Image 1 (cartoon, helix red, strand yellow):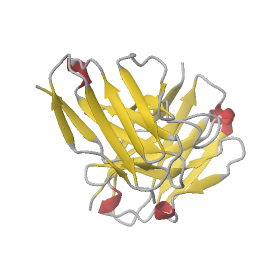
Image 2: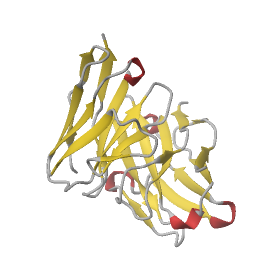
Image 3: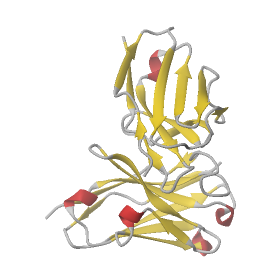
Length: 106
Length: 121
């Protein structure tokens, strides 16, 4: 299975820019998607196919990358962005998810 | 608007089975695949598989073959997942989710609210 590696946690101040990385153990073309999950809620799609903003998602969120290295960027970060962020690949079978990056605000 | 409404929490005994439902509304049910995802604190998010809601065809993650069985009832726009031979390791929140018209096409834009399954004697 394709392993997706994310850093476990990040802490940033409101107004700053933050980049969350996801590295795949094998190529996933551009089929990487990003989600935000808050406690007690289902994941919310932010970015699909590496760089496409999902409907209703603020333009503060952006995605980049291809192949094995991908990045979710939030600029500027707001207090409401406190959450866990997951990457997911759908190029290789089975779909796999990263373990998540917990974003905390200082 | 697109909605996926899942059935309520389940408390089950080891060795038994549970069947979770996911009722879809706000779109043409048979035009989109439904996927199922398991979430635990320890293992994170795991992809179980998907069902073609038009044909009933399925694709399972090898890890969940023999554990999960996916079915649909087109007349009620409902997808089901049965989990069998339950063990404590099956305790998790299970989500149904809908993506694009084809599996893997894009991310999962719509999710059910999740169903908590607790396996305990």
